[in-house]
Image (cartoon, rainbow, N blue to C red; front, side):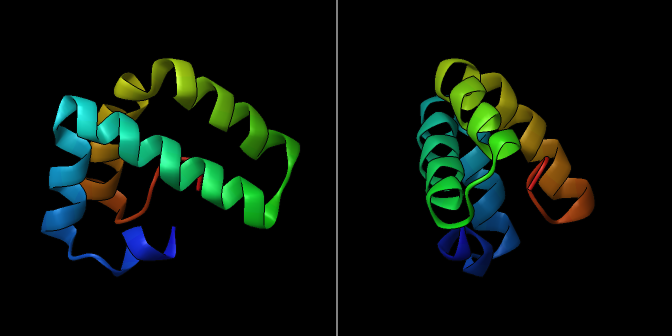
Length: 73
C-alpha cells in the first residue's frame, strides 16, 4: 500500500486502468494491507478483489481520480 501511495497519480491511474495489471495491483495492495493491519472487512475485500478484482480495479481508478485514494481503504 505504501508503495502504491508513493507513486505519482499518473502511475497509479495507469496501474488501475490496464485490465490484467489492475487485478494484480489490487490483489497485491489489498492482501498486503490486510496482512499488516488485519480486520474482517479488509479480509472480505481481499477475497472479493481476488475473484472480481478487474471490476474493483476500475472502481478504484475512478476513486483515485476523484479522491486520491483507493475505495474502502
